[in-house]
Amino acid sequence: MLINKAYKFRIYLTKEQKELIHKTFGCNRFLYNKLLSLKKEDDSLSRFDMIKLIPTLKEQYSFLGEIDGCSLRCSVFDLDTAFNRFYKKIGGYPRYRKYEAKSSYRTNLITSEYRGKVYENIKIDLNNKILTLPKIGNVSIRGYRKLKEFPGKIINVTVSREGNKYYASICVSERVEVTTHKTMKIVGIDLGVKSLVITSDNEYYGNPKYSLKYESKIKGLQKWLSRQEKGSKNYKKTLIKLEEVYRKLKNARKKITEEIVSKIIKYNDVIVTESLDIKRMTNRDKNRKNLRKEILNATFGNIIRTLEYKSKWLDKKLIKVSPYYKSTQICNQCNSVDKSMKDLNKREYRCIKCGNVIERDLNSSLNIMYEGVRLLVEGNRING
Image 1 (cartoon, rainbow, N blue to C red):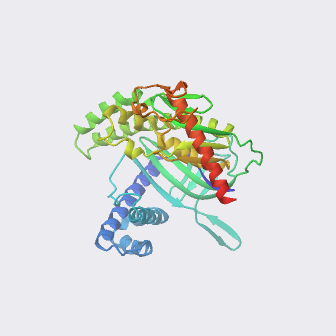
Image 2: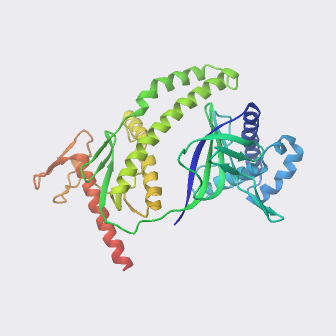
Image 3: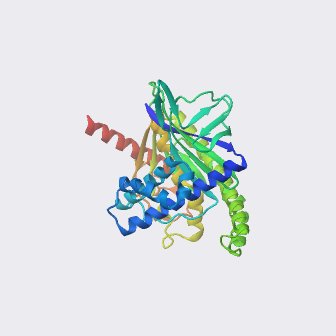
């Protein structure tokens, strides 16, 4: 099975290369905003019309010709994708890009052949740890020490800055071998705030609450940032420090998510989870402020997204139960419903009908698993 997989390397730049990368960030931001203004005036502009405008804009603004031209076309594709999402009512209306401590641009691999020799604008030498980028040239990279060559073809590279560090994320199309031996072991998982994941196998994965570690630092930097003149040198320095803290928080969350999901995927062939409506759950009118904050810090969306792509890669089945399924209120033994379990302070389920006593989240994960089995059998019956 073919999949697209990203390999993220840290890159080390010379002073001249940093300046050129910063210029590329700025030029792509400028082009995106310019075309967005034109699109607002004439909504009929297609992506091809916008690409045709690039040479004209290069004549008007000579600095656009100093950077990688392929990255400019990628900015056009990004704007077109944003509008398509808006038309499909998936996202909001595209907004202007502004200067941030976290910036990026993407460039695609272009291959050409001349006199029997193949030329590529992107090259990587994993043995010598060197990446060749258009206009930038050779840069030193670090990461994936055991990787000697990519098991597929490079599609594109995204160069990004996160605080005071620079990265290159290389997207590769590669083939993965899917195991034919399956145990068809099924597991239901409940996502929570106290414990991030509770499985129907009675496994609890705690919530480290990394946000508490960085919360005071983020608040202090945000307060300091609000007092500085926007766009000044000190403002940009503080912005970089703030982005560095956010980067550490993001990496800590990503690590725990990867560890949990990898373990669940490894030992189970069918995973059943709730299809959570995060937007509704974090609605200010329906949730207390502290609970809303806890839900956002638990990063339920990241866990589900990681489950989705890893189950695809390893040919595992992921079943999503309706967000309106009353997994918490149903007794896993007799299926009676106790509406009083809507109260989040009740941490133990006591069935008044059959006398079943079980921990609230474990009961929920068992019900999610049973509902997944029902949906699986029902789906097989329809397909059969």
